[in-house]
Length: 367
Image 1: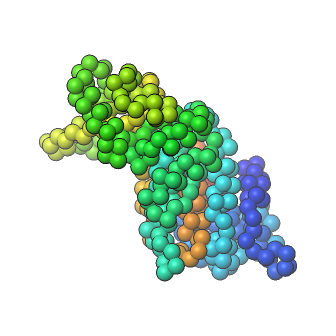
Image 2: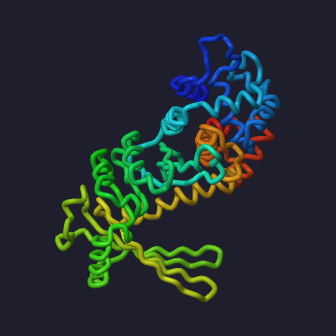
């Protein structure tokens, strides 16, 4: 059963409480599972965790021991303030990713938890690795500020199993050490190319401007809410003209994406460039599109569906631990296969899970 496997995963987490003093009333696995379940069921804070537990206590006893009943809100708060978010993330993400297959697109990007700052620390910035195809967070790393992503990305990659996957990232990660780390992990990459690599960008722009017509594009058209977007993907695999090519580990191509958007009779065009270890145009186009999932399917949902920036949890590790629980709850809601929820929005899934324990169980178990 998934619950039993979840308990086994949580056993790897070091309990921050003084378990040798005999004063611990509630099991760590009960606290973490109730906290995660609360967020799936439309809750948001420690008081909600206590209320959810008390309302569902009889049902929760089907798979939790609860030796001293439901913890109060102060117990939830104290535990999540002191719990190591790295250990929590590793345990829960490993549980989620148990059925992940090789060959996924893994998007890497950072997000600041805007409401998490207080007098003792700035707002936390979290760099996440997000599997685009099955909408799960594979790993994360906290940094003090966005500019530290350059050093955080290689460290995050070293923590993950990414072989045979395609890593995508924005221009901040367009660094020689980062692509070296990616290829060393036996993965491919598609990374945005912008002005932080001026020489490389200038050469790419000049070449595409001169020889664009000689490259056959892959063209897609999308129409949604009165907006028509045409995208043209081009991939240049002959890089004999590119100075310093060998300095970039695994570099086999330079890509271009031209987007033409028509809305309300007005048309705009945007051109973006990428470096990549791929040589297949279809794979390149798929990876570029998948990268936006970390913004649209993860960061946007954390802010809008879970109101992360409005959270009042600021002390110690509580903002980071709640961030982990929100990502797990989001993945569970997205991957639910219950046919009755198939057409429901994420908000509706969470609301219906709060009303019906059986609906919630289908989300928790992915069935």
